[in-house]
Each structure stands twice: as C-alpha cells, then as structure tokens.
Image 1 (tube, helix red, strand yellow):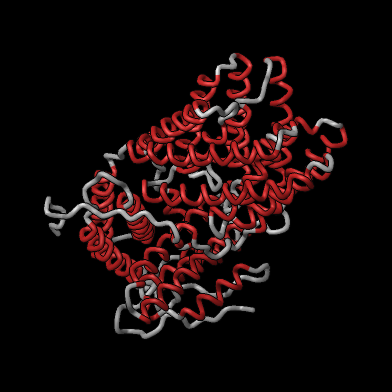
Image 2: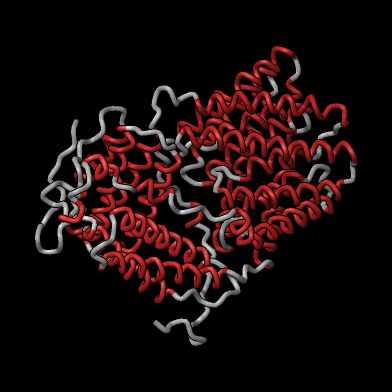
Length: 576
C-alpha cells in the first residue's frame, strides 16, 4: 500500500471539449421543474401585464425561480428547503437593492456582487442545495445590482419578490396530496436500477465493474438519505421502500446471486403510482440466525436503516464551510475580476460577466473547465436564439411573457441532458427579463453579451487555476482514515457474538457512507491541479476491503445466507 511516495508521477490533466458537450440521458423527472417554473412564473407575470407594470417582472421573477429547487426532496424536507431558498433569495436581493440605492459606483457594485456570489456558492454547497444551487441566487442579486433604485423603492420590490416566492412555495408543494411519497419512490427506484446495473456489470466482467459498484453504493446511500429526510411518522409505504433498498444492498453484497431483471422490474413498479412490490421480509424465519429470532416481525421489518442513520450526528455546518474555503475564494476573486474586466471593456452593466464566472466553479479545476466550455457554447448559441425571438417578444407585453415562459420550460427540459443545452434557453430568458423591457437595440445586446460571456469564462477559469485547493490531498487521507476506522469497527461487530442488530446496522450504514465519501473525495481531488497524485492504489484497496466487510456484515445480519449455502437470494416476485 505504499504507492503514495514521491515517485508517484503528477497527474496529467486533459482539457476535454467534445466530451464536455456530449449529451446525456434526461432526468427521470425533467418535466417537474420545467412545469413548476412555468406555473410559478405565469400568474405573477400575467398580473403585471394586466396592471401595465411589466417593468417589475425582474422582481417577481426572482421569487418565481425558487420553484426550481428541491424537486428531489421528500415533501416534509422540501417545505423547509424551499422556505430557506426563498429567504436566501430575499437576503441577496435586499443586499443588492440597498447597495445600488446607496452608490452608483460600478466598481463597488461589482465587488458587492462578487462577495454575494461567494457566500451563495459556499452556503449552497455546504447545505447541498441544488440544482440549480447558487447560480439562480447569484443571477438575481447580480442583475438587480445594476438596476437604478432608491431606498424608498426597496420594500416594495422585496414584497413583490416575497409574494412570488410564496406562490413558488405553493407550486413546489402542490403534488404532495396526489403523490405524497413520490420522491422516496424515485430514490428507491434509482437504487434498485443502480444495483441491477452493478449485478449485470459483474456478470459481464470488464473495466466497468468498479464504476458500476461506486454508482450503486452512491445511489443506495442517497436512497437512505431520502428516506431519512421523509420524517419520522410511521408509514407502511416507507417500510416497504426500506425493504426494497435493503434488497438493493443485498445485490451489492452478492452481485453474482442477484437478478438484474427482477431488480429492474421492482424499480419500474416503484416509479409508478400503483402498489409497491411485495418483497417479503428479507430475513425470513428460515434465514434468520438464532441470535435475532427473538425480535418481533415488526422490528425485523423496520430493518433499523433509517434509525441507524438518525443516530449519526450530521457534520457541523462550519466544518463543511471550512472545506469550501478555496472554492469560495475562487468565486469571489473570479467574479470580481470578471466584472472589473467587463467594466474596463466598456460594459455599463457587467453583471453578465460576473454571473458567467460564478456559474463555472465546480468541485475541481477539471470540472470547472468543462463547465466553462458548456457555458460559452450555450451562451453563444443562446444569443443567436435571442436575436430570433426578439421580434416576437417585441409584439407586446403578452408576447414577451409567452416567450419568457417558453424559455423557462425549455431551459429546465434541456439542462438535464447537458448544461450547455439548457444555457441555450437560459440566455434569451435572462436577456428578455432584464434587458428587453427597456427596448435596447438587439445588436448591442447580442454583442455585449458575447463579450461578457467570453470575459467571464476566461477570467473566471483563470481564477480557478490560480487559487489552489491545497487541502485536497489531506481530505483524501482523512477519507481513507474514516473508511479504515469504519471497516475495523464493522469487522469487530461481525466477529462479536453479542453484537446487537441495531449496532450491526449502524456499523453497516456508517461504513457504506464512508465508502461513498471516499470515492467522491478522491474523484474531486483527482481533478484538482497543482497537487500531488491521488493515492489511487490505496483508495482502490480501501474500497475493496470495505466492500468485503460490508458483504460480511450483511451476511452476519441474516440478510444473506453464508457463501455456499444458497445459490440465489431472490425468491420473491413483484406484485403487478
């Protein structure tokens, strides 16, 4: 395991272009944010048309865009997340409006915008709010920084944003009565599909097994987190979903015994609105070790999965923010320099360069480069689309609103395929909302946005390269240590005759979470520049040892027979 010495060559970082533009599969729920944002934007905008005050659309749009958030969260958690997003949007908007009310100095306003962008980026990453994470919040605060304002107008404009935000909250929560467990069902289905893909990859062999395994563990971990966020109220649906997630974990522990077709069948049934598959108790009486037979069936059915997760205290927010210091510094520096550069080139409202820079920053420099390519291509095509749409939008206020709604829908429908494709619609949307009500010449707008896009991308990426994340290697070492400790703890419990089911479940959940965290940390560090090479051999060996221990823990819990006593673990079918 000593592959981390000084002889390890530094990684060679390639800068992909074509690969960054490759289209992926759309999200399973791409239509939900697309329809939600249309439903959130339309009523406030049409009301402003009726009142003849479409010039205020930028403020109502700020609140309406909050409907884009939290579509993957259970409704109990979604209510809180949406409320915090709306409050965060209002806080950034208030800071921007007060700043522009107090000064018209463009350099000062760019500096304020850059600081707001850094705070929004750090908080969204630390709290895992997204997508679209900080980009929408930064767009709202940066765009309004350059709209003439007086202090007396600020309360009214904030009230417009708050009212639209409240409507967006209602739109986001509207599906709850019709499909109260929809997010949990989707997360469980994704875990089953990922486990099936891993089982199929294991059967085929080849280089794709490790990637499929990591993806499956991440999907199962995400499913447990979703079930955890769903609340503590007892529910037969949640119990059934827990059993299905455990079935996915069983497939991870014994992929050669798993039936990918059956797992996919269960996933399809879970995604629908009908009855959940009847998988039965994974620990049937004939498979339950004598040490756990004194438990009631209800206790075994609960499987202790969510309870084990709740016993693990979350990391304090300040520790997560500390790890994000480099990306926050990159955001502040890159946005500020991009704004200053745009001002030097004659831009009167350099918010577009600032927002372009803010949208680039990912977990490492390599991914930031990919996002820069996507942003530039999307914006350049988007300004051409804006030039085509402008004559229609200038037909009148109602036509303008309809164009805005179409761009909103298109952006959310396409962005899941690739960021650049969504940006093709985002660009005309932003220009229609913030620029067209003033009826500026289309040619000037297009030229200005092209220049600002290029400036923001170049300067923003340069800041990402300049600000080195020197702690990336240390985070990998800490993640390796966490996996080793969790594996040793789980191994001790496996060999201890007096280990309780709750302790075994907590150890298994903790080890699985540590493995997922190690892979994410190693991948992030591998794409960082100016760092020593990631100890990939140690990472792979730690993952392999952890997976063996996880499989042993699953067998110790009675979820799988010991090797050699059974050829298959999936005897139950799925209900229609």
